[in-house]
Length: 175
Image 1: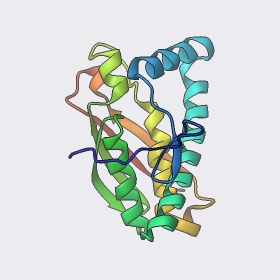
Image 2: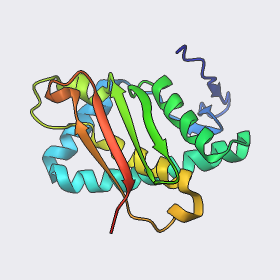
Image 3: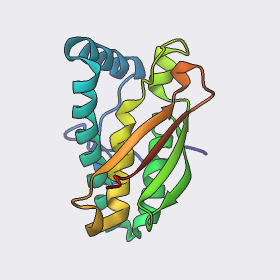
């Protein structure tokens, strides 16, 4: 996959835009070092909950902008979302299953920025920031039906625990 993403830079403000959204370009270690610092300061579970909500909202927003500006249907939009994330250096997202009717999906992730920075001996899943990416994308896919649905995501394997890639399973909570 060749990352042919246009970056428009406003000559007056210096603001970068891609896919009609303002962007920030920064080194991977900067992001992960901040991630580790917040984990240490507040604990993993509270931070995980905050990230899940924030990244879910961001995924829904990105999908809405893209669907509107490109005229994509919900599934096309979700597929483009993970393609663009892959092209932006987060890792390589591969949709293994995506079923709007069942309200569930599964994504494999190789070269995750978090797994690469933490290393294979982390002893725990470290890519939980991506859980909200999955729940927000599924929320977009489900449309109005997903607006109030409780959607869950779990990283079922992580490269930072010695696996060859990370895997996420997500779906509408049953019961």
